[in-house]
Length: 328
Image 1 (cartoon, rainbow, N blue to C red):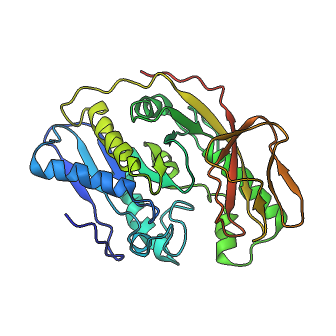
Image 2 (tube, rainbow, N blue to C red):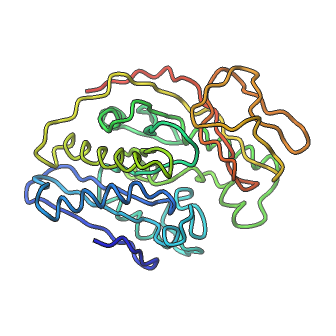
Image 3 (tube, rainbow, N blue to C red):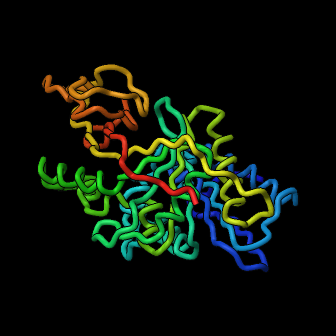
């Protein structure tokens, strides 16, 4: 089965049982250089096509390559980051807008999303979950228990929350620095800048998990992606397989802050890996003018990107979360 992509197509594979059940969608390569999800999906598709694995109830859709242009180029984005400002657009202005016009209705046909990613610095896999149930204006939600129950069965022991809250603060900071005068700036200062696949899925009534499977080049990231798909299928009852037990040794962190790179000469204090611990006041980085960026508290560095382009996210800061999770 080929994964050679056509940038003008969003290719999906749907298996619909004649018996009722849950509706799951699994995405790979939302970012084109994050291919572990694609490869994990292809392994599961091969099992389904050969009959060694059967969907016995419900529906599952696989999208091995979500952003074919970025995948073809071997880079994160085609014309922009698909996993930001994700929404249908009546007047699409770029390739990712056109993908969104097909992807968003496809997501809305399902009730659960598993989005498979990898990251550019060393570190262990982790799952990103949504907020607790709430009726607020930023990300109202009513399926937190269901989402957490799935996250605890995917494999990784680390769960991370606070994505959209953190992005809302980042947008306000960008607006304080300058007024946008070109499209890239307009997108990064849009209130919906933090909305990607999982946030969109929650906005249409579903629940969703982003699984960061490991470093881009780590062969184990494919194993993590494959295992997560199989565990999700079993947990949701789409296949006849033993239900995976929840992870008990769980670490829950909360994103608190995003820091953008502002100049090409901004520098990290040392090479960082995702979830490296830092102490309050410890040097994280410095601006090109010598201004120190120190840890605001005891916590963790997340997604440090040595190659970040000025004006884009450079690193995140996280703290331990007080949230208590129910595995049922």
